[in-house]
Amino acid sequence: MGQIIDGKAVSAKVKEEIRLETEKLKEQGIEIGLAVVIVGDDPASQVYVRNKEKACETVGFNSFKYALPAETTEEELLDLVKKLNDDDRVDGILVQLPLPKHLDDKVIINNIRPDKDVDAFHPVNVGKIMIGDYSFLPCTPAGVMELIKSTGTDIAGKECVVVGRSNIVGKPQAMLLLHNNGTVTICHSKTKDLKEVCQRADILVAAVGRPKMITAEYIKEGAVVIDVGMDRDENGKLCGDVDFEAVKDMIEQIMFRLGASKYEIHLTYEVKTTNYSDDFEETHHSVRSVFTYKGLFFRVDEVLFRQKPFIVIECGDLDELMNNIMEDAEPFPYDLSYEELCDEVKYSLGIEPYPQE
Image (cartoon, rainbow, N blue to C red; front, top):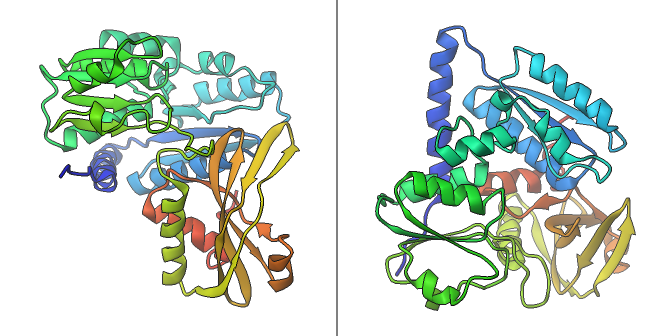
């Protein structure tokens, strides 16, 4: 049986290493600061930014958050980027994507100083990754390398296959494997006999975003497989790397642990679609378990924003439950750690207040 990589343990180890390094810098009078800019109210962005703030606190970084309204102009955003470029307290700048449609993310990214571009999206940093002389790396490829490292696998000389050629994941991933002396093949939509190519892989990174594209017959025994794709399931629903039902079950277990109890009723609702604020929202209702906590009723559901999947915990009294007019708490994405899921459930149940903006 294959071994599942413990991503949570890998993450904790990396954070602890950074914390210790940060402490040493502080002893020398050096403070590290990360500026995070968020424009608009995209629910995923809000959660990701909140998690970045928590990560900064964990490792000892100073965190500077700039929350701008959705109607912010490109000139206003560029003015802020320039100020952060010139701010000595700020060592890294991260502009949370996606930006509202009227803003050109390439223009914004290209105006961030390369030595403060922690996402490594600036053309200068992309070029540095190409030649192996980089200071920053895109987070997903960097995370994949840490996961591979955690298995004890020596990349040198290994057959490495990357399925997907995006600028954010596929291409930089291939370069990092190459810099570690892997023999790298990049596969894409025009690749012939993908199965045969994948079967050669000692290390396989799937980043193509097609559901169940890579099956067991694509993978040779003993291969290291990392899946970073965003997928749609057989019903056409976006599900990310983790199936909704699996996440729902985990959230329901957390609710039990926090004191919620199951209400003996199962309700079935039809799919509904709504358009608002130029974003397409689609809520998929099926049979859902109902829970009670402190006199209110809760149900775990799924929502799509800008074609990305989120979890939402709906809340209401009995009349609202029966008439399907329950109020949604703040949506949160699938790809959270167990601790982060616990935090979101506590916020949704009202056990803890949402962090102040």
